[in-house]
Amino acid sequence: MKNRSAATAALTLTALLLLAGCSSGGESDSMPGMDHGGGATASATDDAAPQADATEADVMFTSMMIPHHQQAIEMSDLLLAKDGIDERVTALATEIKAAQRPEIETMQGWLSDWGAALTDGDGMHHGSGMMSDDDMQALDAASGTEAARLFLSQMIEHHRGAVEMAQDEIDDGSNADAIALARSIVETQTAEIAEQLLNELP
Image (cartoon, rainbow, N blue to C red; front, top):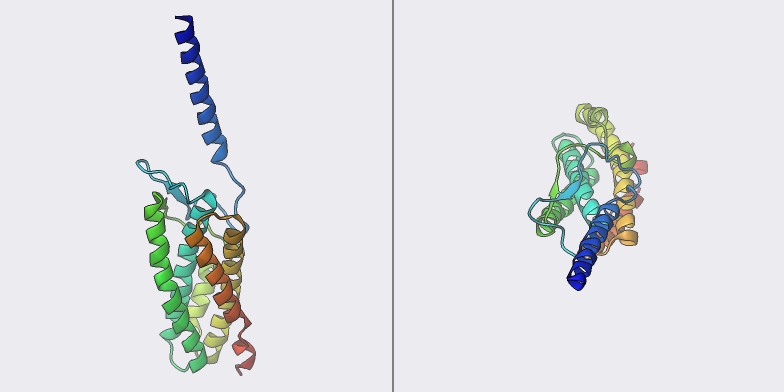
């Protein structure tokens, strides 16, 4: 009986330690430029925990990059709906849409596979390159060369935020697919930032 009691106590202690480890392991430093107070974050669903090959950093990167990409597409749509825009700028907007829409679908699939859910809200603030409502309204109201210049300047800031987020995933993530996407984002969006279209417009 003594041996059985000792074994039971040992199992109970082990379970408590594991629970304590899970609780403390759930906290991590926030990504730079993110406000997690009430926004677009991912969490494990009740009936499925994130898979072992996707860490919190992978889930955070993916859940934050989805709305970031969605806004880039919205900005591109606003620009492409206008007349009198330099064809080089419309070409860039078209390229952004073509690249980022399938990436959104891929990342949404990852969250589903990992048992993580994207919550509603806008927990990303301006420091992550996201445009404010006023910024989007200004782009919507602009026309001609003014709209083209505003789109380019806003997209440069937007891309810089995406590159920072992707670099965090490269540094801290574990999932090979997510890291590969992050490397592609850094390469592609850095090249787009480097374009001199803004200086070439009248």
